[in-house]
Length: 406
Image 1: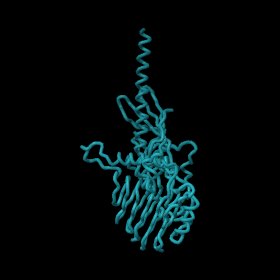
Image 2 (image 1 turned 180 degrees about the vertical axis):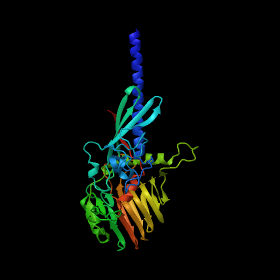
Image 3 (image 1 turned 30 degrees about the vertical axis):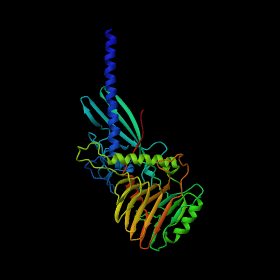
Image 4 (image 1 turned 45 degrees about the horizontal axis):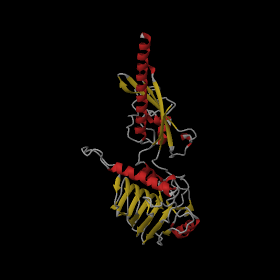
C-alpha cells in the first residue's frame, strides 16, 4: 500500500510538470504569433540595413530573426528563434530560453522554419516573402518535463494571388460577355507594370486586365489597347482560390463580413481606449475608405484619397478625382462605374465578379457577366502596385492554419 501510494504521488507530480511544460509551449506559440503579426516590439539592437519591421522573410532568416546588431554578431544561433522580438533571458546568447513562470519555473524556446516542400527563404527573390511559416515551440516545466508543439501560419488571410491589375471574372463561355468600356480619352492610363518598383530590374508586367474566357479577353484587348502602357493589355488568367467558384466566393464573403463585424464592434463599451480595426457598412455608403472596409450594398467613393482593403458587394462608383491605394474586391453585383477623369489614380489591384450573395434559391453555380465602365475625359490612372497590395493584406492578421503536438 505504501509503495502504491508513493507511485501515485510521483505520477501526480509528473503529470503536473507535464501540464506546466504544455503551458510553456502554448505560451511560446502565442508569443511567436503575436510577433509575426507585428504586435511585439524588437529589442534595442540596431536592425539590419533596409529592415524596419518584422515580416515573414526576416522572421525565418537567422541573421534578421535573431538579436544580431546590424545583422552580425550577437545571437550566434544557426536557427531562427525570434530573439529579436521575444524576451529571452539573454537574446544574444544561443540556447537561452524565455521564462514565463518562476514558481514553478516554466520556460520556452521557439524555432521558425518553412513547411517541408516550401521554397528555401534564402533563395527567394529580394522583397519576396514565404507564404507560410512553421513555428516549433518547446515548453519546459519542472522535473525535466518537456512538451513540443508546432503551428503553421499563413502570411495572408486569403489567397494572395494577383494575376492582373484588374481581374474580371466572366461567365464560363463568355456568353453573355462582360460589359466593358475603358473610356475613349487618351489620358486614361492602364498599366500592369509594378508602380512600386522604382529601381530596375523590375518584375515583368502583369496584364492590365485579366479575363477568364476568350470572348471577354478579345473585348478587353481591343477596347483597352490604346490606353494601356504595358504589355499585355489583357490575358486569360488563373484565379485565386476564393474565385474558383460562386460557392467559394460566397464562403469568402461570409468570412470577410464576419471579420469586419468583429473588427468594427467594441466588445467592451466601457473600454474608452478601444480602436476599431475594420469598418462595416451594412447598408451601403459613401466616402474615402481607409483600412479594412466591408460594404454590404452599393458604395460611392468621393473626392479625396483612400487606401487599404475595400470589399463592396453592390455597385462601386468612383469619380474622376478619386484616389485609392490598395486592394479593391467588387464581388456580388460585380459592377464598377468610374465617372469622369479628374486626375484620380488607383494604385494596387482590383477584382470584379458577379455572384449571388447571399445565395439565391437555387444558388447559382456559374459567375455572371462583370461590368466595368469609365466615362468622361481628363487624366486618370489605374496601375498595379505590389506594395499597395501587400499593405492591404497586412490589415488582416496572419491566420493559423493548424496546430499540433509532436
